[in-house]
Image (cartoon, rainbow, N blue to C red):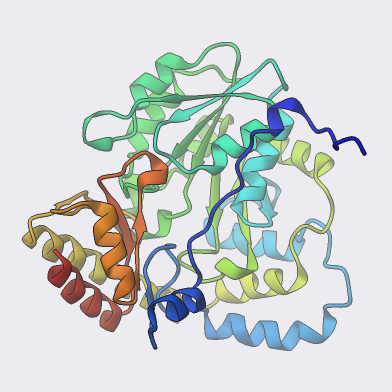
Amino acid sequence: MSAIKVRSDMMDSKPYAPGLTIEEIKEKYGLDTVIKLASNENPLGASPMAQKAINRHAPSVFRYPHNGNPRLNAAIAKRTGVSEEQIISGNGSDEVLDLLVRIKANPGQDEVITYESCFSMYRLMSHLCAVNFRQIPREEGHKQPLKALTAAVSDKTALVFLTSPDNPTGLAVTVDEVREMAASIPEQTLLVIDEAYIEFARPADKYDMRPLLEEYPNIVLTRTFSKAYGLAGLRIGYGIMSKQLAEYIKSARAPFTVNLLAEEAAIAVLEDEAFFNTTMDVVLRGRELFTTEIRKMGCEVLDSQANFIMFKPTRDAMEVFEELLKRGIIVRPLKSFGLGEYIRVNMGTDHENKVFLETLKEVL
């Protein structure tokens, strides 16, 4: 029997390799409890209002959702202060990012540009679409290289990906910095700003890119319900873009990609101000605590605008990761990002933060 053939450039692709589950770690190390601070999830879990919405609409899951999710788009538009026609909701913001590459970049001709040590999905999506993918070195201190990115743009550049706040560093770029960049690149090149962590950036008006949408139609913002809104398991996000670009995506995408329960939960959580405000309080308080206390341990800590920090421990990062894991605490070593000396850790509850800091101090 002959082997199944696929595209030659797909034959060497490596699948995404997630870490061990909480259950696997408990079994491997004989632990009763495990604290997970590795995936930038909401430390408070899911919104009570979202959970009620899921339960209320569970009997309707035999029905298809409303294609295009107009009710959700309207709720997002109300929350963000843009028109409904500018919103594309998706199966996680990953779907929106993927659609942007698919409709904008010509396979085998165009390119996607971003910077090194960034979110892995940009490379994966470009690779799947047979689009050339280029990465620019970061600036000193791991900063996003806006000037170098701008200089790298050519007539073949279909999209430039920029993450702010950045993953895994937590660093953010300002509205003024992006405005300068947007003014210097061709109108036909999309400047896609991944704002998965934007709710945690302070002061908000310094980092929120929405004011640039009217000035530069080639700017696209993507956001998610996975972090601040606690719906990571439901896979739901959205993009904010020009009405024209949104129409192109609507005409090209597959139907029904946002499931019914995810839509109802997202609509509900947008109304849950108490949950959102408590999340902000817990995360921002934890971020300040982590930054202060880990620096006291002699570690390098980057100034984060996200719900996590990146730090360089005083001993080998993989050793620290393993020692924490043996003690029931999961963090993210950054070797896969090309930052092998560093670790990323997200804020947990006050209790989880206390246990983590005490254990890290012991390990170091």
